[in-house]
Length: 438
Image (cartoon, rainbow, N blue to C red):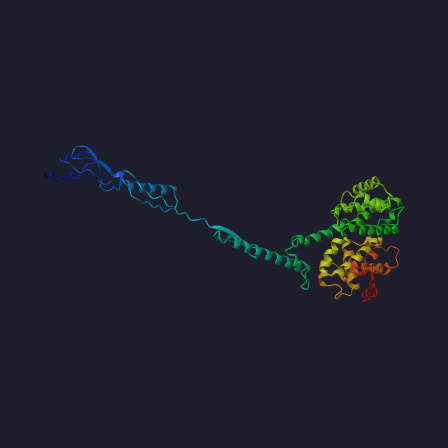
């Protein structure tokens, strides 16, 4: 029996209406077809009138893609952003594939302000990768500029070209406060005038200058035994003299108590670990009780109005030794003369900066430095050689009498090898006489 030929589906000329009419085909139909995109399947009736799935090969319409492109362009125009919008893909009736919008935003340039040596600000734009390098270079330029400014200011202040820059090596040391050191010492010179001690011994009825020298000689030994800082010793002397100048009715038996209370106050001000009151009681052979020391401490502080922040000869000595480019022997010699001045009441008439400068000059004369007084020292001390001769003569005279004096605390202290045995050097009396005659 011959099989019937299979009649293919016939579609109208305008193309088959997939949702409308389809023609019925008689006869048996092979309905097995390969499945493609399930979204493109349509219902087609087979030869037996049953609906069968069939692939739709209808071309994809472009109206929906054009509408998406228009919407994207409208949104970009509304936001006023510079962006590149790329829309691509295959759009079908059952499914839509649209590529994501790619928006390219230009990064904002960063601004770096660099300080030039002539103090003008220039604005430069750079990327974030180069920012650390530019900040480092800018910082270096600022430091260089500060160094140049300080050097120029030092030269301008002194008005001399032969003056050495004594602070140049300390530019990186924050504790040296190179930026403010000149202003600090200008303030010290003003403060030493306001806190200067006048001649007070004539107003005292029960004590004299000899008793005061004995007290200071004993306090220097106590200071050395307790191993206190130099600042404490010089502040002790200032507190005692200032109190005696403001309190005329000091009893003879209270003078040592005044010295103990003065060193206790100075220790609390300058030391990290100040001596205890019991230490002072033991060092004074228990002459005074704890209550007596505390009462005198309170009385002295009230009399001084708690004003104990003053420039002493020590703060000027540190600066002047730096200007002298001193070595250890020079330092010991200067402090030897300065402590000799602490014992003698006659040195109260000189201001602290004069005593410090004269100590340096006396040390230069004793050690036979050349030159005796440089332009750098003249600049930073503010004194010339003729101005220092009178005070220096006193210091050299104290040196010549130290070996024969009954008050030997300073002489013994600086005769030790730890301090270079500078007290044993011959005094510079002949040199000073020649300078005076000249």
